[in-house]
Amino acid sequence: MNNQTTDHLWISGPPFCSSTLLVAPIGAVEAGATTVSVCKIFDVDGEALDIFEVEFPAHEVGVIELEPFLAGLKMQGGLSQGHMIVTSSRNVRHFCRQQIGEHFDIVSAPKLIAGRESSFVPLILGGSRDHLVSILNAADEIAQVAVRLFYGARSPEWTLSVPARGCSTVALEEELLADFDDSSWRKGAVQGYIRVSPKSSVRVAMQVIERMATQDAVSDQYRCLLSW
Image 1: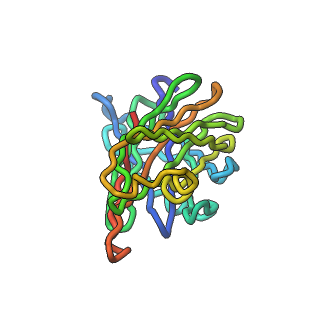
Image 2 (image 1 turned 90 degrees about the vertical axis):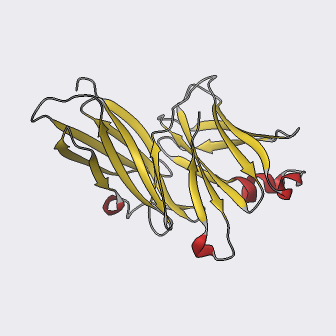
């Protein structure tokens, strides 16, 4: 395929989330051209779950509802989730529309990093907020990843292991910060950022989901935070 595009996306299924793949054309396309997208879905443990191909007019935004392909996703941390590799036959942009409750976010494919590269996400701790940190492993070997949080004068660090071709999601406040000897962030509105760095040449990517809790859990607000 000439000018093909390949991206890696974090996906999740019911009951927490509904995921939709969007394939958006870039620039002018010739009349009658089509875009072919091949999607490979892997479970959290990197096990191949499904592969399918879709074709649509190249001048249109392709919309693929993923729920029919996600029934076999395993649960991790209360979420059915996985890793999708999508390759399209031309120069396009891939997005994932995530519906969590009544909230929609359209998320671009996260940046893959390797070696000495790092990925960052700014966030605010406390104030009824909590965060899920998801890491994708694009490699065919296990990834050891350093996750470091910076806020105030504090910078705790943890090491996570992500299965080959799989993904791993952890609750920042409940799983990581719960074992750290500082609770000043609980006062709320503490600005900081999280950094993810692979410990080898494997390629990984990060996505962070923020929840703003309300008195009624049904009304909780969610948003996907972008990495840079």
